[in-house]
Length: 193
Image (tube, rainbow, N blue to C red):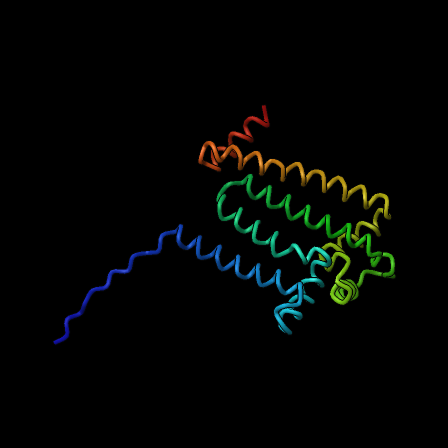
């Protein structure tokens, strides 16, 4: 008769899972970043073309933004102020893309909204704002012309920067207290006084 040896499986600590997740995200982001510079081969060139089609010029920094956003979210999971700040960062990222779209002038050449044309222009020329920012730029331009559009982009950009600056304040205060969630609540309480 065989003796059955009972194996005890210890669940992985949540911290270890978070670390593994961040290492995987970091590796993927480094790969995406390197694809933009043509050093990953044909597959990298294809991935880069898709990234430029989606993000335009901001495709160069999109992997960095992705990693920072994911790492910040994982470090502050459950903190509502962290979500607000991530949204502000994404908004700022998109507004930068809209600026690149306005610089490229693609929005002016379209007779009507054509997502395929926006994608192909950004992908082929490695310029513009890609589908995301290019669509926003076209929508703003068609509603408010260039002056109104730029005003909206500037206002949204300033609001995003102000919210992003609070990240630095939050992280600095967190360093001394050691608790991001409580520090975030303290910051909100002080801001509403």
